[in-house]
Length: 452
Image (cartoon, rainbow, N blue to C red):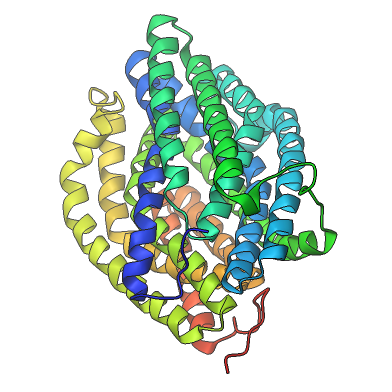
């Protein structure tokens, strides 16, 4: 085993753990970001819109897997905090078997729903439909690799090892960049080229992680003698995973409706929205990784009966979120135009204007996002998954009507999309703060420990 979160200054422990996760997620984001940069500079604006406009469908199918991974990490982090190594081994074996089966099923489902979702749900513009279909089809073929890698990464992080997933991500991201350039520039394969490059790179990352974990961590070694399928532990994983899966599924449907609002404004808006989303993914990554590290920190400490220490972690992370936001709100607007130009949109005045205005608006809203993520991940870490699901549903019930009114009734314009996003963050943040302050999350943990 690597380390635990039960000793040391809470804020420092969370930050140190979050840094490798942050670097790893930066490289993970390079998959889709490099795809967008390459097609933007060497294929064209419609290719950018096609790659970016498919995210909501990818997320819809992946949401079930993400929910399962969340439930698995909650159970494993708490079992590790409680030092229950026998059940920890069985939980991992059960998770591995279920992840493999789930990934195959989700890949097949994804392929089957591409056409109806692109055509009817998103009302994808005709000029980008073919590329959108191609990109999604290849992406879903590679879903087993994506899910299995994420399973290994979640398990390692749950027991305090955030560096190992980083190393494999760096290797696979570099592979992806090389293959993107090769397939698109040299072989002129267009959108299909970047999709295939991503599939190969993710498969490489998955295989490397599997080999390493089997050799390095005896407790996670899968052999004929150690593979077991524990239905009781699976029930526990599903108990935490299903609310998260529902939450992510509802959230993905929200993204699809929002994408439909985006497509209403035309291909230029679709391209601008895609580029701004890529930039936003990088900007908000430190906020998300601090919150994710807090989730593991809280899970282990609650599993060990250290509630006070878990809550101190929340206070420390909120301070770091605030400092980060102060930097972002001043720096991001100044570099917005340059960032958009990286995606090949520098010569398109309309796309540039939409993107710069959106980035300036979003920079002011990111404090809501940081606080929302902090409290949401704490609640997930301590096992309060159903409430987290409830907040997401409430967010959508407010965000979508609010966005619809701005787009179709008030006719506020393109910025309606991002104002609706901010309203959703505000809703979830408020609900989570109330839940945290009232202590409704107590008693939800998989491992119940009473401190002497």
